[in-house]
Length: 156
Image (cartoon, rainbow, N blue to C red):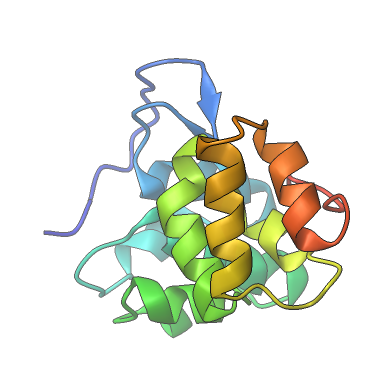
């Protein structure tokens, strides 16, 4: 069922990966992309089955990085599953897997696109999880080790 909640209530003011805890993916997209022209009306035109955070990542990439108009970016997003949305967000397949699994720990699409080694495959994904889970490194340190350097930015 599509998430049609376009209000602005927040469960908490604690930020987690660019979204307020408990905030819907649509509300996060509106909050982050409103200054770039995205409106609730644009998101109501979204015809996909569900709108996940990765769809918001793809909208952010299309609007902010590629200069698409919000209505065109939303049109391109319609009917994409999370893997296709990851590709639309400029991510490689294992980057999408990493984002889906590690977003809750602070990983962002922007961090993944900033990899200086230009590849992020199974080995890097596995090593990132190992550094986080077994070595208990902070995300930024673990990501810096697997990405060939520190990410350019972890925020929009």
